[in-house]
Amino acid sequence: MPHRPVLTGALFGVLCTGMIATSLTPTRLPAQAAAEHARTRWERLCQIRRDQFDLILPRAMRDHGVDMWIVMQKENQFDPMYDDLGRGYVGSVAYWIFTDRGGDRIERVAIGVSGYRLDECGYDMVRGFQPLLAFVAERDPKRIGVNMSELIGAADGLSKTSYDRLVKELGPTYGSRVVSAERVVSDFRSGFTASRLIALGENGEIARRLADRALSNEIITPGVTTLEDVAWWMANELQSRNLGSSFEMPSVYITGPKGIEASSNERIIQRGDLLMIDWGVGYLNTWTDVKRIAYVLKPGETAVPAGIQKAFDNAVAVRNVIRRTIKAGPTAGEMLTRLASEIEKAGFRMQGTFNETTNDDKVEVMIGCHSIGDRGHGSGPSIAWFNPGQHSFPIKPFNPFSIELFAWTPVPEWGGAKARIPLEDDAIVTERGVEWIYPIIDRIRVIK
Image 1 (spheres, rainbow, N blue to C red):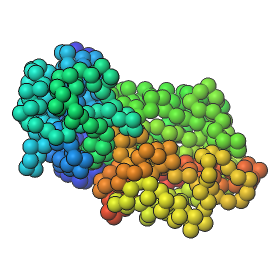
Image 2 (cartoon, helix red, strand yellow; image 1 turned 180 degrees about the vertical axis):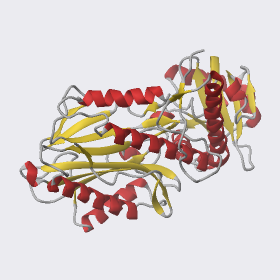
Image 3 (cartoon, rainbow, N blue to C red; image 1 turned 90 degrees about the horizontal axis):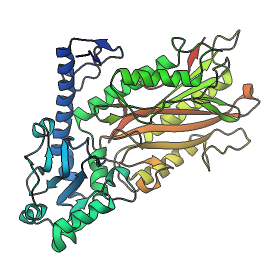
Image 4 (cartoon, rainbow, N blue to C red; image 1 turned 180 degrees about the horizontal axis):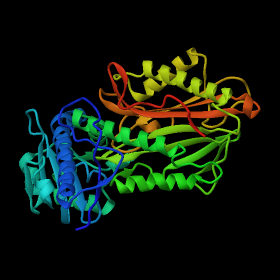
């Protein structure tokens, strides 16, 4: 059989021992070793799933008064929770059913779905198809959560026809007890255990190293390389490592005095360009969102121009305010209000409308600290202007966040036009505050 590229190499993290190493250099190994690697990935996903079921799911259901959660799927029409719940073969219709029967755990049963990886990981029972009503009636739930939501895409996997069928299967008594599982899904997906956090940290390390390589002379030759050349190189690196992408094509773009000039297209990278990367990686069912910045030196230059460097330094100062302010406890909306106040106290001005700057000497700021981890833009609390529906969600310990901000600073080299500097790296938020899970951006990289 053909050999497959796999990840080997440097160890990341010290949260536990025996962790599988990953690297950024794909190698070709014998078929047996490749198979062992596939099993290793599955074993890690299995451990993550068991931990989520044991440690996150009970509170997610009880906090929102849901004593049964049903995820329904049809063959070839998969719910967004399909990977989270362990996948499996669905012949016609299947139900992943989680029931709070008291005690310290949630009962987990899969009906109408099969497969080795599902049978061996996390479920109390994996059964062939059987009538749903008798199973539900035996447990007699008072509130049955199902995946329908106006707000959270990951909690909205139930189609109209599937909903109609499910309610019919449940009958009048239990069909009338169906409620949205929106908040259950949000808390389950945004709640991170140690095993899942380790995977996210490894993922972030992969994402930032590849981005750093992309913004270097290894990949870029000024006057020759296009933005899409860089984006395709990054996409190829993901494919060679069997990794996913949080946002499809990596965003490789140029920012100038008039804002974003070009993104991941045929534009040739020239000297004097200020380059940005915005992208995310999918690994072990975790997803990142990371930005990196580089400047292409002009002839005679040896460093980033002073005005652009000052703009970067201002963005870092804003990030420092964010880091010392965000903590678990308040809702995301309350934290956004608090952040705005602290940023103003630090001498900056919050921007009214995103990307609309004022022609003055003030540094303007916009905050986009959003949920991360279960997707590039996640299902949990969001301290970002673009997720108002998730402002009411409380920030819980070990929720992962993209610490994202934008700072606009007047730049003399650009005739006083404001340079937009975006910073974004992933972290967890605890009672102690923002805790980084890999090395964050600390400078503008230089391309010679």
